[in-house]
Amino acid sequence: MEFETPLLAGTLLRRYKRFLADIELADGSVITAHSPNTGSMLGCAEPGSRVWLRAVDNPARKYPHAWELVENHAGVMIGINTGVVNRLVGEAVYAGVVTELQGYATLRQEVRYGAENSRIDLLLEAAGRPACYVEIKNVTAVDAGGSAFFPDAVSARGSKHLRELMQVAAQGARGVIFFCVQRADAAAVRPADEIDPLYGRTLRAALAAGVEAVAYRATVTTQAVVLDTRLPVQV
Image (cartoon, rainbow, N blue to C red; front, top):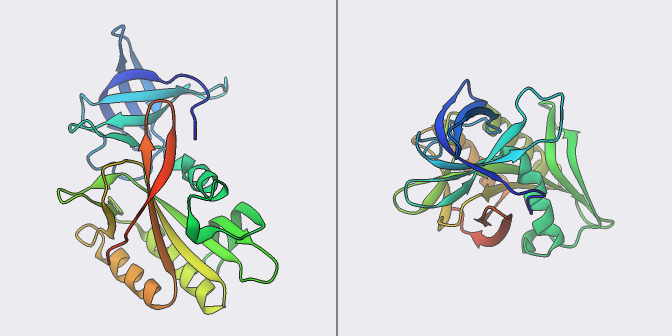
C-alpha cells in the first residue's frame, strides 16, 4: 500500500478520547489529528514519539489529518491505522505473497455473515471449493522477546469474531483469523493472555474447531506499508 501523497511529520504530544491526537509540527504549530485505531495502542502512543500524518481530502471532516505511522523509542516504524488492513491483506493476496489464500476467483470485503450479525473482512470464493472467510486483526504491539501479541486491550469483539469463524468451519467453509502485523521487528504472533485471557482461550478453541490462524508482518516506511513476511502463530 503506497501513500498517494507525502506524509506530514510531527511529534506526538498526546493521544486522548481514543480517536484524537495532538501533534506538534516542525514549524512549532500544533494540530489535532484523527487517530484511526480502536485499541489501546500499547507502546505506540508515547508522548514525544515521531509520527507521520496523511492529509485527507474531505472538506466535511472536522480533522483534516489522519495519523498513519509512529516511530517507537527503539526506532521501529509502526503502522497504526486499523482501517487499512483489508487493503494491505488484499494487495498481498493479489500479489501472491499470502500463499495460504491463493486459488480464489473473487475477493469481496465487508460481507455480512454469522449468527452474531458480523461483517467478514474478506470473503474469497471460487467454483468447486469452499468459501474462505478471513477476519483480519491489526497488530502493533511486540513484547520484549520479539513476539507480536493481540489484543492490546480487552476485546469482546475479537472473541465474537472467533466464534463466528468456528460456525463457518462447522458449516464446511474455511475460517481464517489473519494477524496483520504492521511492523518489521516481530518474529512471531501470540494471543495476549495476560491482557485478555478470554480471547486466548477462544482462539485455542477456534483452532481446535478447524479455524486457521495466519500471520504476516509488514515493512513500514513513510512511502508505503507492504506485507511481505509470514510469521508463526504461537498458541
